[in-house]
Amino acid sequence: MSLSRTFIAAAAVLAAGVSFAQAATPTDASAQVTQRQANQQQRVENGLKNGSLTVKEAGRIERGEAALDRTIARDAANGISPREQAVINKRENALSREIANDTHNAQRGNPGGASNQRLQADVQRNANQDQRVANGVKSGQLTNKDVAGLERGQARVDRKEARAAGNGHVTAGEQARVQRAEKRQSRRIRNERKAG
Image (cartoon, rainbow, N blue to C red; front, side):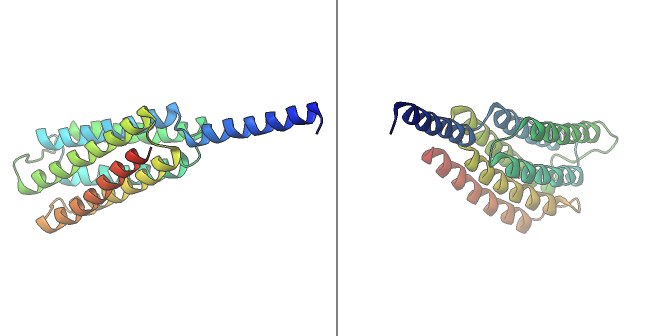
């Protein structure tokens, strides 16, 4: 093989390696998106805790969070492009406005009520898990593929929370189902971060 062909072949291999590394390593967009998810979950939990959100309002927000998690999972698999990030930001902004509107309307939740307490615990754990994913992205322990899988898991947890809170009351049985999903998700986060 001539020197020029060797050089071209080496350059192609190097370019493919760089391209693969970029696809496997989460981008700043992934870090921003996952951190914002954690922050918004914390705002929901704070609203439940201080009574500015009702259980039903929090359930509606969780339904929106589940849909957003599915979008993030789809987009994160190959790295979130600037166009995809713009769409995600738009949806996150809409959820942020919904949280703000619901926390400032005339409806008040009962922070001491059993349903509220159950959902508070579940949403707080969800916020913690979102933060663990965000930290894994920031530290480089999680790849884009890891983030995609974990966001699908977060979507499942959010859907269970939304279903449980949909009628404004969270039973002990509904909370137990949410907690089982949260335990599975917690193990997945731990395993993915160890593997990274």
